[in-house]
Length: 223
Image 1 (cartoon, rainbow, N blue to C red):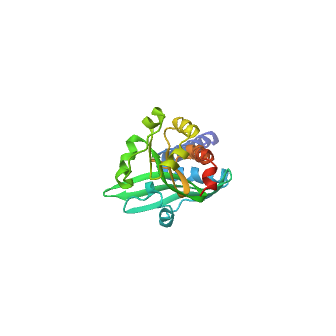
Image 2: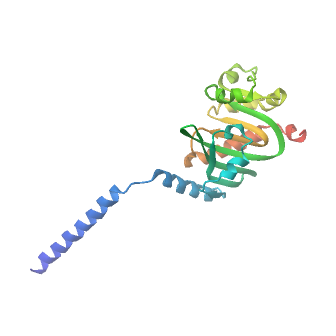
Image 3: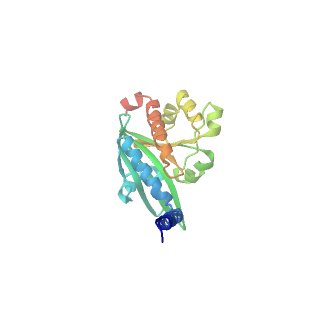
């Protein structure tokens, strides 16, 4: 065999191995959940927040004072962000719970406050019926027909509800109709019936902070 033929054979063998590796790699299954977790971890570093992907039953119990997170037989948090964002202590996490034969997946953005507020939920008509019986209270109506048409507000303290849902807050919520909000005790939270999506986490954190900033300051001096 001459040198040219040998070189051609080596080249063909090399190309064959390369094609085999490429095809094999193409069939390697990509794990979307692993990719999401890695993207969340990267985002946490960017936001200077701590991150833990591990399941945490204690954290779910810690925030069980939020009615939206007080459901199901087995509940736990995972993909947990914690730290300070825009000067406020926040915790963000995926949340799953089992109810009967089904598993439900939510995500929660929680901001801690140095106060104690009554339980208040601002939700949507298609969601509020899930907790209506538990709260045992009819929703509160407001002068803004558009706001009352889009949101359901439930709170035992009607004055507190009116204090929170002032004109500027209602305007903000009407521009952010996907938000479900609960204020209770020392926390304000926005919740989504969806797992954490890396591309939306920072924007939702910013909206949580904006909700906090829209709370009248006299509420904090009178508690």
